[in-house]
Image (cartoon, rainbow over all chains, first blue to last red; front, side):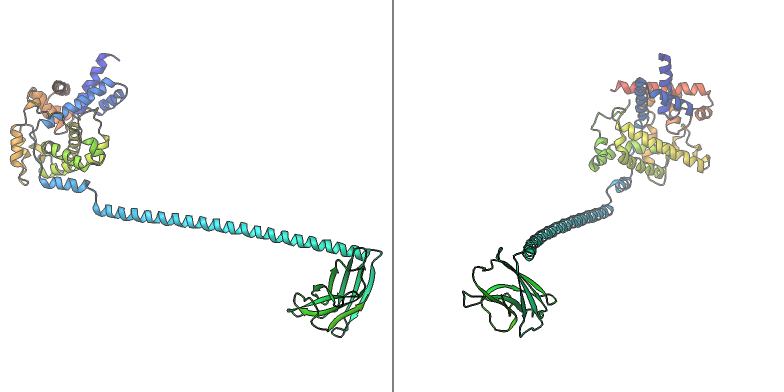
Length: 261
Length: 189
C-alpha cells in the first residue's frame, strides 16, 4: 500500500474521530485498520485529539444530586445483596443438606452392602456347617447301609412294651464293624421336653448303658450305635422316655420297646 | 493554550475490578469536564445531567473495556459522553421542532442557558471562554466545522449545507483542523 493510501485513511480517521465520516468511509477505514497498525495508531491519536475539544471547555461542576444518583446506580444494592446473601446462604444450606443426604445415603448403602455381605458370609457358613452335617449324615448313612448289606449282619426284632404296644424295632447288628443300626416304627410322639433314649443291657454290667438319644418323626426313627460292645454279652435293648437330652441312667421303667438279642 | 491534565493515576483498571473508591475518584476528576461537554452538546442541564449519569454508570459497567494503550481514560470517558450526548440530541431533534435548535448556531452560544437549573452562570462563563486553547488557535473556519461535527453531531453534508460551503471544502477544513489538534496533542506528550 502506498503512502498516499495511508494518508487517505488517516484523513478518514480524522473525520471518524469527529463522528463525521460517511458510512462508506467508516466501512473502508474499519477494513483497513484491521491490518494497518500505523493507521490504528493514527485513529487513536485523532480520537484523543477530538477529546481535546471537550477538555477545552470550561469545566462545570454538576449538581451534587447527580453524583448521588450515579453512586446509587452503581453501588451494590444492599437489599439485593441481602437477597443474594440469603439465596447464597440458602444455596449453601441446600448444598450442605444435599451433601449430607448423599453422604448419608452412601453410608446407608455401604452399611446395607456390608450387612448383605455379612448375611452372605453367614449363609456361606451356615451352608458349610449344613454341608458338614450332611456329610456326616451321609457317612453315617453309608455306614448304616453297609452294615445293613453286610452278610454278617445279624437282625434282631424288638417289640412294643407296655407304653406303646404297637411299636416295634429292628436291630441290624454288624459285629465286624462294632455297629448296630436300630430302626424304630410306630413310637408315639415325644413331648417337646422329652426324648427317647436307647439302653443296652449288658451282661457284664449291672446298669444299663446308654446307646443314644433320639426323636421320632411320624413314629419312625433310626439310630446307629457305634462302638457296640460285641465282646461282651448283650442281654437286650430297651427304650425309655427321658428328660430331653437324655440321662445317664433310666429314670423310670416305662419301656416303649424292649427286646433280647 | 490547551489545559491538559498532568499525567495522573488512571482509575479505570481499579474501577474494572469493582473498586468503588477508584470510581469516586474517577467521577471527581472528570465529571466537571464531561458535564461541560454535555451542556455544550445538549444545551439543557436536565438532559446533560441525565446523560452524565448514564455516562458514568456505563463507565462503571464497561471499565474492563478500557485499553490504556489506545488512549487516555479521559478520552475514553469523553468519547462515551459525546456519543450518548449526540444520540440524545439527535433523538430530541426528531421529536421536536427544529426551531428549538435554531438557536444552537455556533454564533449564538447563549442557547446553552438553562434558566431552570441555576447552571446559567457557569454555562455563560464557559461560553465566554469556550474558544481558547487548542481550538482557539485554529482558523475560525476550521474550528466551526469541527465544533459543528463534534458538538452537534452534524455530518459533512449537513455542515456544508449549514455553512453553505462545498462538501469538499468542509471535509478539508475538518481534516486540517483535526491534524493540527493531533499535532498539538503530540507536542504535549
